[in-house]
Length: 247
Ligand code: NAP
Image 1 (cartoon, rainbow, N blue to C red):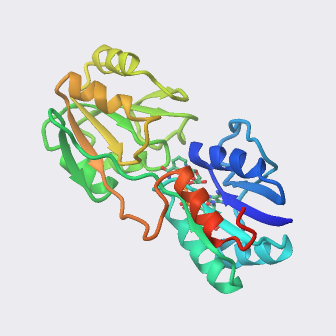
Image 2: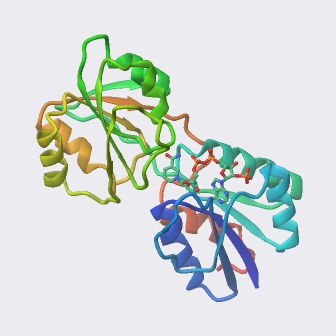
């Protein structure tokens, strides 16, 4: 029985876990960072919390006799992906990576690409604006550098009390429809949207809504991860191609 450890925290990781769990001769463990107090249910056994860096992950791989490591974490979860590469190299564990491709602007989109959150805060410009931050709670503090704006911050769980003083916080878990996103942008009279280029369909409706309202978007880019499969089917094909049993 081969043991596959999936580093998760994404919808794709959950879908992949369900597909692999259905394969005979495969045992799957899904790993979550443990940040969300009420995580979505998962189709396989879950372990939760950090491993203690690359060395900790390497120790886990050895102790739990993991045969294959799959990095299916979020495109912006960079540290765990780096740890996965290091731990795989340390232990000689085959590593497969699943990462959805980034979004690309289409006709009617008014996107300003920026390399990080600090640049996003700068890109909002000097004049006060009503800004919708659809970036999660962890990096909201970057916008303290641009206090002239009013912020609407949406996240699954409330941020630390002083993360972004004065911001209006909206706690909600997606997916959200395009109509609901448009209504939100209009209700709060939003001038500009800030988002990470996460890719995928689940969080795309806010961008369609911004396009429909001709609103500008500040888009935080990510460096691509070399060799990553762009979807669950491709990742399964990569795994099957590497399996001498042809599973
Ligand atoms: P990160 O900066 O890359 O990782 C920080 C630390 O959290 C890692 O060093 C590791 O701790 C622990 N960790 C992260 N993912 C883990 C996992 N799947 N299992 C066990 N430990 C994990 O990650 P992040 O950006 O804070 O994201 C945390 C989690 O949320 C990830 O699982 C990611 O897939 C999910 N997520 C992130 C975003 C985002 O925008 N960043 C969005 C949606 C979902 P140790 O070093 O102690 O092992």
